[in-house]
Length: 167
Image (cartoon, rainbow, N blue to C red; front, side, top):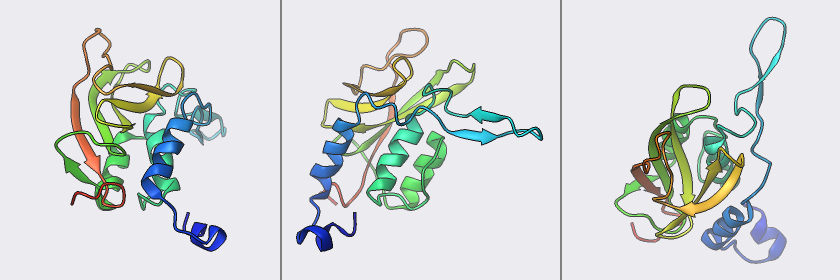
């Protein structure tokens, strides 16, 4: 992204481009697999479970593409959140366009609890990886359900100074 000014003769309009990429990612199969070798037989293992656990991969990939995190691409919400804080993201009280939202835990298909992370398009809508479609999907910020059908609580919102001009 840093070469845009050289290539196009004009600076990148960061926030609008970021939101366009987030909206354009809806339905993408790009975030379905990350393979690691887990044993001495070199058997590959998909740590994203064919897209079921890809929320952190999706968000960190988007943030990394725009140099909004320093630590690279992650497969866990905890390390994505840690990297965000270390890269200048700050908590904000309400959702704004381009902020990152973190939801509370839910029991995943693997039987363990997982927090969830996504990117806000505006004050009401977000994009996050959906474990049903196994791809990024647009949804209401307060429309995610837990395994018992209750709405998942939003734990926090994060904003970055390069995307939000309020601090």
